[in-house]
Image (tube, rainbow, N blue to C red; front, side):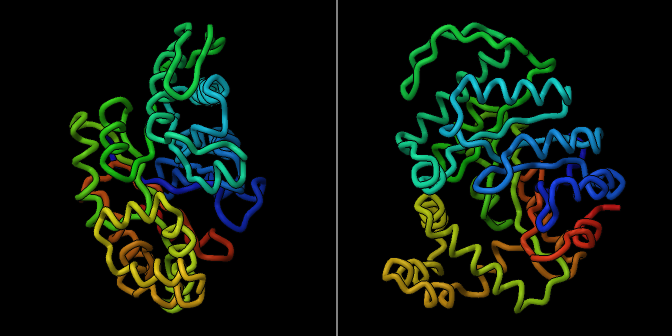
Length: 318
């Protein structure tokens, strides 16, 4: 596999139309990939459709689309449409998302997440190939769906995974895994579970980056992101499994309702582990550590406020 260097879209602080020139510049800066996400901002597919037009050289990926918030057939149709518009350049990343996004924001029960992802991956494998699907899965039923649009080639499907069960599923039944909120050293822990399914499985990592931001500002911003994520049950369980005991005081303060104390309890060492910051050259070297430890596709996500143009250019490989 050629060296990949990705960035998350849409880029922060710019409207979608304002991003056109910068995204068109990405290939000349050494970027190979753009990866989208879906929470409470842009949907996962529209920014990639725009990027496919603005920079046809780029590979496109979703990291991730929740398996609950679209019906199985609708998810397959969305993926097939983008894969047909950008043949051979699209990868579909799916995952559970979180109880906050699924239950609180979308009013959908967050039931049996492992089985829902497994069932969705199995359905997508058949539906994206054009097979007629009539199947009673554990978490949903499909009766007689046949895709009217089949991409050539069929896009790979990746699974967002944190702990061993989902990591193994990603390697066994999908084309690889998407990992998130971990350090370069943590990569050594999680990747072997994926590679049980084969040595060539792709591993995409969303890596939060703040280049050329002074340490106090970077750590202050990073603490707010860490507190917001690490108190969501799935991420708390992930870091408990990783053995990140340094977060215990933060969890205790959060559980007690003291948000200010929770922020203050996050040590610099954890911030520096989980969020890449400092001079751009250091940031590139730090991201390369993820690659050296088993990530095949880094997908950097800018989290500093302000116009992202200089940060995007500074993080490029050219």
